[in-house]
Structure formats: C-alpha cells, structure tokens
Length: 502
Image (cartoon, rainbow, N blue to C red; front, side):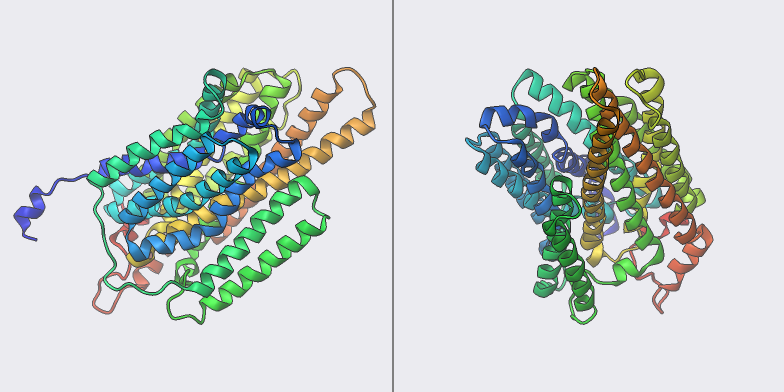
C-alpha cells in the first residue's frame, strides 16, 4: 500500500472500540442481569429453589470452560469472523431463553449463551489488542474497555431491575438481541479481518484437558455453594479439575502447536496481571452479590433502586480506569498502580464491613462504593493492559482468553466461597441468639458484613502479591528489551512499549 493510500484510509479505531465494548457489555452484564430476574422467572416457569442456581451456573460452566478454546479459534479463523458468528449465536440463544416455555429450555439457552460468550469475549479483547498499538491510544482504549468489564456487572443489576419491574423477566434475555444486532452491524462495517498467514491445527488434547478441567473447577465451586465444601461431589469435582489442569500444562509443554503457548503466561508481569484479574474478580463478587441482597432484603430497596445505588461506583470506575491507563500506568508502571488499587479495595470493603441494619446508604454504603470504584478502575484496566501488552499477534486471542478465564474463574470461586461464608455465619448467629423479632435481618447483615471483611482481606493479599511479584517499571522495560530479535525488532507487538512510554 502506498503512503498516499495509507494516509487516505479511514481510521475506524474508535468506532471499533465502541463495537467491541457493546459486545463486552453484553457478555459481562449477562452474568448479573438474570440474578434480579430469577424470582419472576421462577414463579412464571414453576421451578424450585434447588433448581434456581442452574440458570446462573449453566452460563458460567459453558463460558468458563470454553474460553481458552474460544480464544484460539479466533486466532485461527480470524477475529472478525469469530466475532460475527458468536454475536449471531448469542442473539439466537438469548431469543430462545426469552421464549423459554419451561425450566429445561431456559437452562439450555443459558448454556448456549455461555458457549457463544466464550468465543465472543476473547475475540473482542484481542481485536482491541491488535487495533490499538500506539501507547497513549491503547491506554485510552483499555480505560474504556476496563470500565465496561467492571461496570458491566452493575449495569446488569440496573437493567435487570428496570426490565423485570416494568416489562418482564423475559426481556432480560431479549435485550441481548438488541445489543448483538448493534454490534453485528458495527463489526460488519468497521472491523477488518486479519487472517493468519499460516493456519495451524487446533490442539485437540489441550482443548479437551483445559475444557474439562475448567468445567470441573467451576462445577465444583458451584456445588460448594449449595451442597457444602465437604460433599463428595464438590471434593471430587475440584480434585479432578486440578488434576486435569496439571495434565493440560504438562501436555502444552510437549505439543508443537499448543492451545495455550506457555510463553504467554511465563512473562512475569503478564502472569501477575492474570492473577490480579482473578483476585479482583474473586473479591468483587462479594460486593455485587451481597450488597444487592443487603439493599433489598434488609433496607427494603426495590430492584430498580438497588441497581441505581451502584451508579456512583460505575462513575468512579470510568474515571479511575481512564486515568490509570492514560496517566499513572505509563508513568509508574503496573506494580505501583495495581498495588495501590488493591489497597484501596481493602479500604473500601473494610469500611463496608461495618454496616448494620440501621446503617444509611449515604453514610455507610456510598463512601465504600466510591472507593471501590476507584480501586477497581486501578486494578482491572491496567491488569488487562499489562496482560496483553507485548504479546505476539498470533497469541493475542489466547492472551485475551486468559484474562476472561481468570475473571470468570475468580468470580465463580468468589461466589461459592462468599455464599458459603455468608450462610454459615448467618446460621450460627441465629442459633446463638435464639428467635426474637427482627433477628433475621440482623443475622443476614452479620453474614454480609463478614463477607465484605473476607473480600477486603482478599484485596490485602492481592496488594502484597502485586508489590512483591510485579517487576518495577525499569525492570519491566529491561525485560521487554531482552526479548528483541537479533535484527533489533521486538518480537512482540508495538504495544510492548506501553508500560515504559512517557
């Protein structure tokens, strides 16, 4: 291509950012939008409390277990093609769920949504990685994407409340058709396909081991939430998951074209960034899930009002994500930025753990949400940026899939662990205080406050790990330079310089 033609080629990068952000929002909010709709769906379709969890778990199982394979498929057949196919599949599954005549069809639709999401999420993030290679523009793009990745869960609570209260729970599924259609048209017009020069084979053994291992882990944590940690199903599922994932790592060392090239996770900064995403996902589910319960069950907020209560947090995530990626990450590097974010997460959740039945939203909840919004913006967006910076173009899909996998697995672990803690603390409080008027609200609040304190401790552990294991900015720059080719050109994408720029 000549210089003149290159100069006249339209720059659609920011429109592509909008398109992939819509897709990411749809995937993330679908993990929470159904939570508020569940009671209405349960009444309408007539399924029991013991079955209710499968509406959520079916999505998590399919999504979490297939993410690595989905990322590699995008690398092999092209991101745009994968993106378009998965959007159509997600819309079709959502329409099926919205029209579900019974519980079985609804669960099937949720599982199909998870399969489509496992293709869509890595393709969206990998498109961002290859589209934005200028360090400053990349920082802006990841600031926006990080806002969506964190704030999407809260948006799901708001949207689920509005749709359920004013239309029907079925619209919590139908609304995805609108999101998917908008993203499909945008992708068709503005995204360009980059096909691999050589199309390698899919690592079938690796795909089976990774899929089965992640499925067993997510399933085991889901069972722990309902059956307890001592149940045979929980123990066997978790043990099988660990064994299969260990076998997966071993297999990836031997195969010529691995599903997950170990060079992607061997980089010290990138490996720690993956861990930071998982830690944040684990801790954050305690906030979204149990603060929603507290606002509705104890304070009497409506579904819409409880969703709107999270708006200040979303605003702070937007500010913090963009500031972190554009200003502080290039200046200070990931060790300082992400460590400070983890410390803020500890402070915010520690403050929230002081709530009681008489606490006000303005005095006890709002300050914690503001601090948590700032914290999550400083952790998630820079972690995503660091995890995908410098990765070779042919590996950008699987690197993006690892980010989504860590967020999903972290969230699954968080949901199971925090639910078990809340249930046991609440039951213990009731048994030790007898039956008196208003005790249930006090007991529930005691369980929630304990969960927030445990989540705060998770952030504290994350801060220690980030400070200890992330390389300094200078060390990271030296590590990046050491992987340059003999010709002097970096083997990684130009985005390699993002952490040492400015």
